[in-house]
Length: 489
Ligand SMILES: Nc1ncnc2c1ncn2[C@@H]1O[C@H](COP(=O)(O)OP(=O)(O)O)[C@@H](O)[C@H]1O
Ligand SMILES: O=P(O)(O)OC[C@H]1O[C@](O)(COP(=O)(O)O)[C@@H](O)[C@@H]1O
Ligand SMILES: [Mg+2]
Image 1 (tube, rainbow, N blue to C red):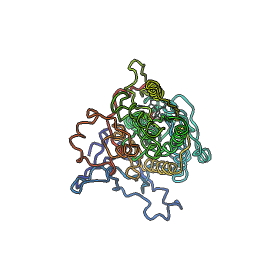
Image 2 (image 1 turned 90 degrees about the horizontal axis):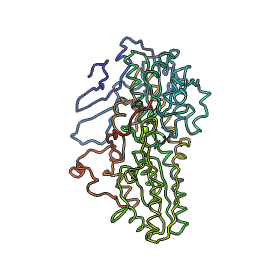
Image 3 (image 1 turned 120 degrees about the horizontal axis):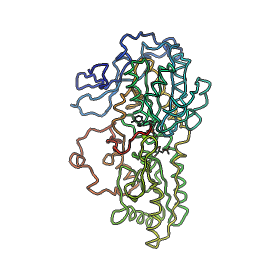
Image 4 (image 1 turned 90 degrees about the vertical axis):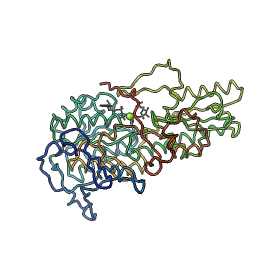
């Protein structure tokens, strides 16, 4: 195991190739902290639960499908209430912040963090940070209690407000220290979790008794390790409304094309799942799967063929798809967080399709629907609400138990604590050589548009050998393109 005071990963190994990628704990750098009995043991809701405290040695495997002779592999610490806590109820001064883009379920997570702290641990002092990271030092705080958050899960967005950019570690940690905050709940995507990681490092460097907890939010589902992000199901469901409308328009017009653009900067999960769910989609285009327009095997040839066969079609496009096809001369810039701003591939592609049909002198009616922000702004659905609740409760149990520097996340259906480096090192992407994308291709009956040059070498050589993720090969991780992140303050 690495030295507890260092910022090296905490790795515990065991028999049979067992590896625990553990999360930091306050006692790693404050060894003499007192502990207290968990107040949950007197909570009537928990008194009937047979084993309500999680065993200290419980962990959750990252991969559930393993070869019979293979090692036990990587595990994460199981989330849940512990017998001893490192904070007394009166001592806790918590804060919650939401950062990055919107995602259905943000308000539910806020509500459930507040409820868990108040109802399970008797915490009375909870602050909302207004408007993302910069709210720590540039804005007033919002006092939160069960009454204030009672109804908020029925609303989209975040009652705390959010922002991009403005992450100034020193100012943020100064503010945490000055206000006497000792539990920080940070809800946000990949960028936010990177920010949380540096806040945690600074807090550890200063030797503060402050638990830093991340809760992963990403409508694009681009955060690795976790099964999926909260709000993703809601987004896929909401996308159905746009796809249905596109289908109705397409069917009702002569040679109609219904064309829907969905979110997905680098990861096409929303487009892929919305397509699979709908069954009305003839072609799905995502950032991970290159395509080309002209010539044999190109997109335009396929559209023409499908139109001649069916008289209408529906196309779903993720916003990050085909970016490389658009004019290089079009200026590309970044948002305040350093994320590359995308060119509008939807408008460009619909114009290219229109031009093509004009050229071949064929009647065609294209209706372009861009529901991107509508999908993101809705409240979360029932299953996401349950997910948000468990996520928030797990996050709170971990902080009360003294864990810090972690992201709370669902792994193979179990709540876990994941060290930041596993969340921030990679990005979750659709792996187009895996089974899920093949399922989509066979469902839409679209060509892959891939040439041999588009298939990674290792996939050509080792088609069968790679162990599957969750038994389905449904998602993979790739390195984040270095150009995407330049932090603007
Ligand atoms: N590498 C980083 N280090 C510190 N803060 C970061 C980093 N990347 C992003 N952030 C901050 O995290 C916040 C959200 O990031 P952003 O990329 O906009 O959204 P998301 O977290 O949803 O991916 C912003 O305030 C941004 O300044
Ligand atoms: O216009 P905004 O608010 O910058 O958001 C647009 C982007 O937000 C996203 O929903 C992802 O946002 P996050 O990185 O914050 O999760 C992308 O799909 C989209 O490109
Ligand atoms: Mg992001």
